[in-house]
Amino acid sequence: MVGQGVLRECLLDPGVEQVLSVGRSPIGQQHPKLRELMQADLFNLAPIEKQLQGYDACFFCLGVSSVGMTEEAYRRVTYDLTLAVARTLAQLNPGMTFIYVSGAGTDSSERGRSMWARVKGATENALLRLPFKAACMFRPGAIVPLHGIISKTLAYRIIYALARPFWRPLQAAFPLAITTTEQVGRAMLHAARTGAPKAILESADINALAKSDDT
Image (tube, rainbow, N blue to C red; front, side):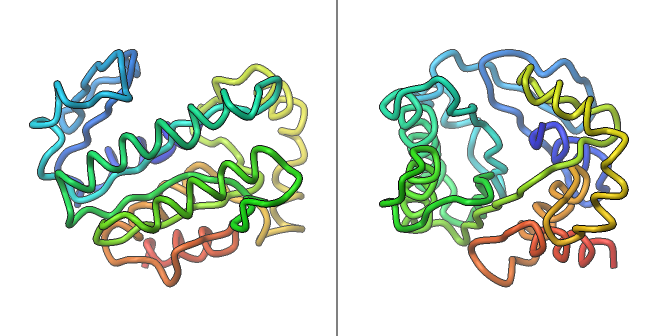
């Protein structure tokens, strides 16, 4: 859902020259600025390394829900895969800004009770040690999907459908805790262009950065 949001903002932004989407399956969109690379094994980017060079930023939006997963399985997708991609990109593009979509409640100590929060925290910490120009960890809480964007997770789609009538009043009541797919996308672009005030950004920071991109 976040990936759909940042893709939309990138394609709309006249300052973005080209967008490269890397994944296992097509995203179902066409645009003059959009290129797609299909790679069945994302743990091994060696076959497409040459095509990954020359980019200014990576918006890493891949992720899965931890519901029903063992820590080992969740860590493989969340930590191992993210770091496999990030290490390759850091070697190919040391001047790149790497932006990782984490989540509110992530545990930077890596020692808490929540499995997903520990794994996300370990992933963030490892990314911040890589030799990128900059790395930003986005920790959104509740995200309102806009412009027809939907989650690929059935449970989330049901929750969003039920909560849709309440989004506007909730946003008005809790502006620092709730963001939108549009705001996340704009904030990512701003962080890639001019940097972010800190390495770890919560929802309030994301919204403030998105507002800065509007000015």
